[in-house]
Image (tube, rainbow, N blue to C red):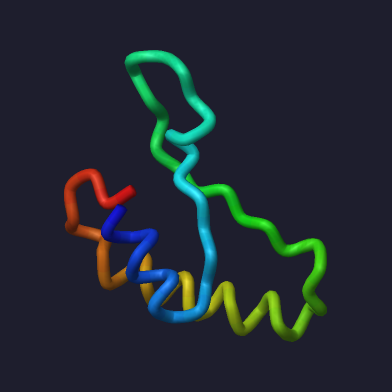
Length: 63
């Protein structure tokens, strides 16, 4: 949840993959929706997301 909140603070909406999983061993990941955006906007958002991921790289269970 911390990573999702940090991404939202940077105007990036991501959804944890765990919300789509019904089992005990939940894979970690993010669902990204980008079909409605132009390539330049996607690139800028991807760069901001990469910075956010780097900042949270050491956090346990950041999703």
